Image (spheres, each protein chain N blue to C red):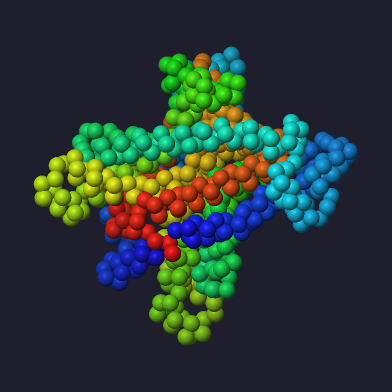
Amino acid sequence: MTAYVIRRLLQIIPVLIVVSMIAYGLIHIAPGNPALHIAGPDASEDVIREIESQLGLDRPVHEQYFSWVSRAVQGDLGVSLRTRVPVTQEIFQYLPNSLALGVGSLVLSVIIGVIMGITAALKQNSLVDNGIMFMAVSGISAPSFVRGVAVMWVFAITLGWFPISGGPPGGDLLSAEGLRHMMLPMVALSIGPLATLGRMGRSSMLEVLGQDYIRTAQAKGLSQRVVLYKHALRNALLPVVTVIGFQVGAMFGGTIVTETIFAWPGVGRRIVGAISARDFPVVQAAVLLLAFVFIVANLLVDIAYVFIDPRIRYD
Amino acid sequence: MTDTSQTKKENQDVSSEHWMVDALRRMKRNRASVVGAVVVAVLVMMAIFGPYLVLHPPNETDTPRRLEGPSSDYPFGTDELGRCTFSRILAGARISFLMGFISVSFALVLGTILGILAGFYPALDNWIMRCVDVMMAFPAFLLAIAIVAALGPGMESTMAAVGISSVPLFVRMTRSEVLSYREQDFIEATRAVGARDARIMFRHILPNMLSSVVVFATLRLSIAILFAASLSFLGLGAQPPTPEWGAMVSTAREYLTRHPLMAFWPSLMIFIMVLAFNFLGDGLRDALDPRQSDS
């Protein structure tokens, strides 16, 4: 087990190196002079020259990359071209908000999704089952921006239960007001994974209920409750964990869109703003950071499998 | 993937009928997928003929009648500049499909070529698949956003971004198909009569896997349309005044309190489109691979 975790950790290193190359290389993908691209068509020679020297664009590409990486490792990702604030400082100001939103939505969707899926499976082909599955298919089919706008319209505008948008007042996430502001983006973001998990939970539970060992458990006179919760549920949850892993990736896109809709001060909203403003140091840093979070999240899911399913052996 | 193609080949061998006829019959039994297919067909019609059926030019403004509800002049109401929402929705179908179609075609061509090369030449395999792994190390939407960031916002860069971010999936899919064909007798035979590699790859292997590649591309189309709409919503894709559905929802957001109907129509269209594609996709998957069907 320890050997497996260490091996997986070591595997991350080459991936991170290439990911950092791509993140840095973004500035050079577009044809033409990147400084001109950043400054815009009407910029004067001086401005372009200044951007070039500030970003080190006047040096050879590999030199630029190595100096960027060596500074990045020391926690220096440059200065935002627009706000003139160090990028690291900006990102770390936004990151906790994004993580809180992402993790909160994931937890919410796992709990509700699994309950919905199991309920639907136990009442197969009933009105409840059809209702839940209809909601699940609708949830999957609505893109995150449609979900976000719909949630905002229902709960903030029509019912007025929650603030329309904005971050936690005073940056205090854990205050009552902070949670109230996070509620709607969290609900909007969790609808997609919730629907997927519900569908998955249902089909997985139905498959398990058809197995011989369930019939054996019932035949030997165990109560329905013991059969369901001790024999069926635990086995039905395994494929659900696999799907949670896939959902983490899907949630990245959702987070970027949802944060933008609700003006939630997270990394996703910052990156969208930075792209429109051609603020490359921020874009590079945010891409690098988000890819890193994604790689680590996938690693955690892989390791979690080993704990949950003793049949999996990685050595 | 290998399993899928093997089943198909078995079907081909066993039944005298073409496997597609068989698949079509299975699909017709699934009511949801038939509904999905019909709705997709209607949307394609909209994309082709929509721009000729509009009541008003999609960008024509009628300022005195801005933010109006439905009327006989404007069946879906008007937007913040008094433009006809109904006409913009109709015109938008073409833009959405075009963006999805171009980006998927790009991914299809590039991904299939790379996938065939990777499957055919073990020496290239390692290089190509490592590149694919690195691209898969990014969440797909983040990769698309990163590419738009590099190329600058706009419709062309959106299509390039969505296309490039789906290339790895096509490479993986075609590569596994090629691997399943490479060692088969008919390829051996072709090689024995002296056919060159390029001929084997593109005249013998490609036609065999074309149907699965096309089905896969159809399923990716809805995701490509969704990505493109999401990027436009974020202001990185189609730019105003283009009547693109995602961009329309984005603008309508500012008027959500006063005129929620403006956001409703484009949201509904995107929802219906993805729902129809999902139904169609589920049906296609079950029809082509009956063993994988949901319980």
